[in-house]
Image (cartoon, rainbow, N blue to C red; front, side):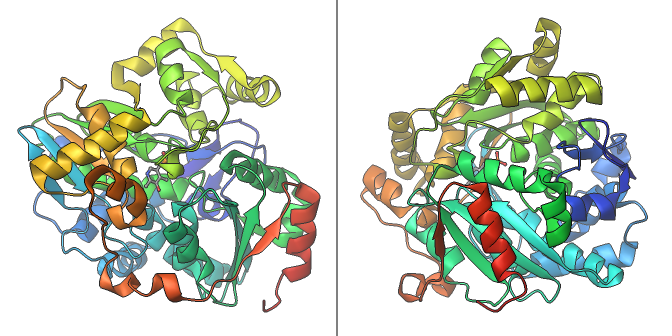
Length: 463
Ligand SMILES: *Cc1c(COP(=O)(O)O)cnc(C)c1O
């Protein structure tokens, strides 16, 4: 399988190349040159397989010859072996034709583990084979950081530098990052928002001299392999509910558009997905786009669901590329205009095309808490605020069945859950002492020069 950049001018790479590169050198994102398709018998054959077995079938076409089937199988097995539920991604019924897909059974209790546990293993394998080392630079609104640090801690071939917006992640989220004292892990608190952190990462990557000197690599959701690994649970859930004989709709709590884009990929692979609901909190750039065709960045406003407090959804560029008929130059023009003016618009027919599959709703804070309270009352089940946004948006859908993705464990966001239900969710036993562990983190201003100086100074040194 070959990978091309959404901006059309970066080198074409194989899966391993796209995995290690993260962001393309022209500022674009890697996507498969062609969407692979599975036929009905191949989807049907997923029924009854374990999560890991199904994952191998779904991901193999994207990996191609970059890793052998045996290598991929080993890494997948190891990635999901430590998850806290035997089904890995269990479906729970909420109401007739309404389901919850629990994606919080990994080591850091958010869905990001599902991709990053695999990515860590694929990186180690690829880097050892190439006798290379990398510095992974990432920005996190909370959950990516802990999942990435957990996946790469103690790696002999990768250092990881993770930026988070100071004071804007929950205490559990912060501690899941800063209490990892492995020598290859550096946490940086930036005086700014998540979008500022993400802009710093992007700027560091397009400074090609710095990028090459540091061997930079990315595991943010701009990394293609993350999207790929996330297509698996869409397939597993849909097949469990009757696909390919029946189409299934999904409601997806969305920030960077990575998770819901994986649902789009599953559909491009031939999985019958009837609708994808892009569920956002009041940071609603995507809801406004799907309503009007204008993609315009607003101010980030903090909410109960901080992992979705985003006004620039980086994976959106991948959808834009398909909507522009995979014309890299046209996509680059739109993205550059967005980077300059903080707004861009797509043609009416392109919007109509996107709306045949996607719908979008912004869910406000009051509705988020009300949904947590209602599901607690009706189902005796605690939802975290991100999952509640997805469940609330699913209420407005007419399709059946609908699967709402539960993207985090309630104990990651105990304050909001307690406020809504009066009950404080408990951390699973393996994380019970998190609040007492020592932390390590440095503070930096929102400034590219300061970040680059810090990274040059600390590269290869024990902290
Ligand atoms: C990252 C995250 C999201 C948003 O996912 P995207 O892929 O960025 O759209 C939603 N919920 C939780 C709990 C997350 O950690």
